[in-house]
Length: 394
Image (cartoon, rainbow, N blue to C red; front, side):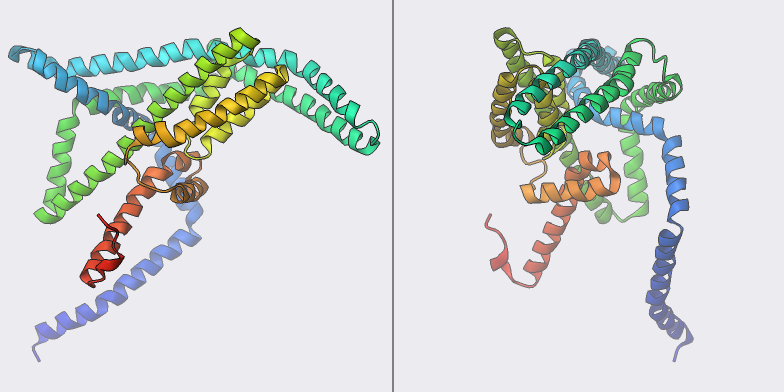
């Protein structure tokens, strides 16, 4: 037998064993050296934090940048086309900074004022509530004692939390970050560098895209590279559709809630309307659980001042979430994820448990991409095995 052929067959036979041993070593390293790997990854993420900030900002601002570039390219004369990218980046960054500044000067003072009023109103409200409960539990001393202890605990711990944690932190945001200068300075430094990186990414967007394609085509064959680019385009479409739609959806929900709270303020004297609208709008970004996470503390804040307003608010939130879940949300998100409620809940639980809050926010589009890959693979195998009757109707 030819020695060359024998060596080739031996190598082909030994390759699965080599791959298996390599995967075993990698698995062993991950399991028994996970702490070291985790620390190394944490350190790497900490070093690259400005680039992560800049990449996220550039990814979110890319849509208005592309829209503005397309419009201005039709207006500017040919001799001014060289300044098109710089002008688009300047307008987009200025617009984003103005929005962030307006939100901060509107929201932070209102939040501080709302929390300060809650601190003042909480003790008398709990005293009134305890009096109402005591009127119904006078015949049962044990139950009355338990309720009294629970209310006292809420009063003591709630006030301590508001006074010592929330109010000082919000006040520090307005007074120059005096109490938490070190950590806040680090965040501000990373954000500043991130803004610079964002500008570089937006200006060099086409260059980076071309370099990525060059690298892809140099490593893989043309067909494989084109399929990879098609998959990258699908992932990008899924993430942009979900994140953009979810942010717009939450902004609209927060605005509707603010208008309702404003009406309640002038008609029934409802307080803390900015705090409540911000809670509802921000938490609505979280899929599935977000509406409930925002509605519960908001209802408790309203209950402290007016039980009637609290009841009306709960009814309003139910109708608002029905409108958002069945009309507004599906229209804005269109078919960006294409997951049923069960798989949305599954993806949030899975990725939230692994990656924490980041997994809760991004778990749905990530799982949507994985789900689509599995769906296409299953359809391909069914067609190959000629079992087309199980395929869904077009």
